[in-house]
Length: 254
Image (cartoon, rainbow, N blue to C red; front, side, top):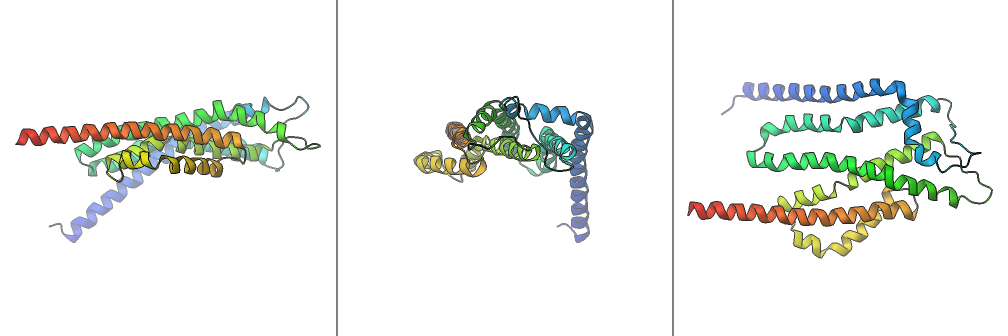
């Protein structure tokens, strides 16, 4: 039986470790901010390339705020620093949580953690290289007659960040499906049976997470559907492997 003094010491040691892990994550973000800040303008120009390429020669982006030319690229640098630091942040979380997990839980958690990071970056890349060119080619063409399409740099950044995180999180669907199946929250058969409702839900989610145009909504919903199907296949496979493994162990013991 642990004494109150021992429990208090354990709690303090956990809090100290948590502070240390959080500090390392914050430092990684700050280091990237410092490294990228001198190139903030160039980085913003690179991120704004999809919209700049679809503006007419007489048009350009505008800055309506007094401090927007400085604050907007700086805000972009902070967002990118957080995104690029994601592996370090996730590792610090893992290092804090891992000692309390069983060995079989660690074996499952490690590939899920790595794949979630990869899928997040894949979603961001899909947004930038596939969705943005289509979206910002579509938008200037639907401007009402007499309206000059000149996007504000801050508004553009808000949409870009929103889409980055929307697609990054949407690409985590296979991980979420696999976790639910492996942990027994639901089964692959039940998820497959509810496929029509899932598809409708994904299109509604695409409508809520993206700007109000059919192109970006569809470009988010369709990959989420394919990723859902991928998660079903992988979750069913992992569940079968675990069942066979347990059956083999039980047979051996008998």
